[in-house]
Image (cartoon, rainbow, N blue to C red):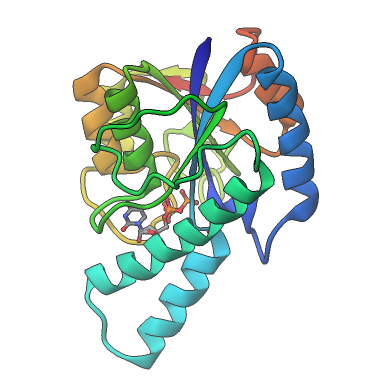
Length: 225
Ligand code: UTP
């Protein structure tokens, strides 16, 4: 049985409220691969819920980075509970919030969420990969490829189909900024490099492309290794 770890960006779950249509289609794809013998670990991001709460809190009082992170963490946990409910029957009953604790699961789906301040759910996915002995993470968000600089700001931004951790980490830096919108979080990247993991960055809206990744076919996206 192949275990696939997904870092599912909150922008896909809740871009502006819950994207019910997307989640319906996402479930169809996962169910079809579950019936082929795959099992999935789905680590949920916080999406607009995290950002809305972080923004309001910042306007209401002067906050520490940790306070912002805790609001984000609870948004990821809300999204995780939604995913667990969607996969009711196939999913492990508990949401994983400590990716370093001993995990025994026999179900086809395990859902993870934010752990503690200082990084994003990308780090939770990396630590779950370590914990479960899985070498690859598929990071689904609203980003199609990794670019050498922000393609929205620079028309000459160059896209990568594959990139080393050394070069990727030059792009994202090594500091944690709550709510920063990077293809993979800098702290998680550092850990992934140490562990020798492969991370695939792809646009999660394109579910045909996601299926191609699962089937080891040619796909649109960036492989970081
Ligand atoms: P996300 O994982 O959604 O991070 O967690 P993100 O980078 O902001 O969003 P995406 O990946 O682009 O969709 C939301 C917020 O929750 C806090 C952070 O503040 C993060 O920005 N968080 C999450 C933590 O502090 N620790 C965690 O373990 C997870």
